[in-house]
Structures are given as structure tokens and as C-alpha cells.
Image (cartoon, rainbow, N blue to C red):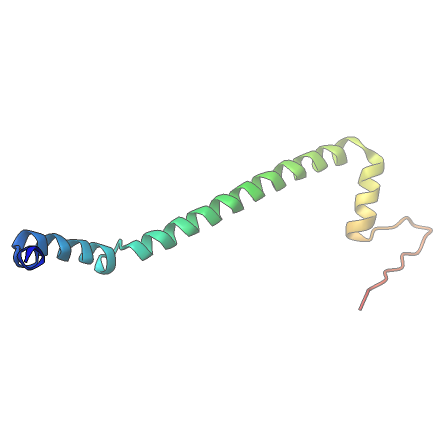
Length: 94
């Protein structure tokens, strides 16, 4: 009896219809909001990663500017540079 009165109540039906509309059919529905929050969390993780990489690269750059031996090692490893009287052999793993 109570349930039938509740279903016939126009205010109750309006509230239920509004909740259903907002939850499923609105452009800012629950699923879109959930997806947006997941993207935001991923972007925050990416931001933290890139900030740590920038700090690491700043330290490496400072070391390359101040230490001539580390600059030579870096040039040899990354850019395959060599002195005039030596040969460089590159081994490629298959």
C-alpha cells in the first residue's frame, strides 16, 4: 500500500526521473566524471615523473658542465665520438 502511494506521488517520480537523468543521460554523467578523474590521476602521475626526470637531467647537466671526464664519457657513450688515433667498434645485440 505504501509503495503504491509512493509510486503515484508526483514529487517522488520527478526526483527519481531527475536522478536517472543526471546519472545516465546528462553530458556530465557519472561515467564521464569517472573517466575524467582517471585521466586527471594519470596526468598527475605523468607530471610527477617528468618533474623527477627534469631534476635528474639538471644534475647530470651540471656535472657535465663542471667535470671534463664525465663530459668525455658522455660524448663517447651517447654520440660515439672518438679521439683521432683510435677506432670505435659498436656491437649491436640481435
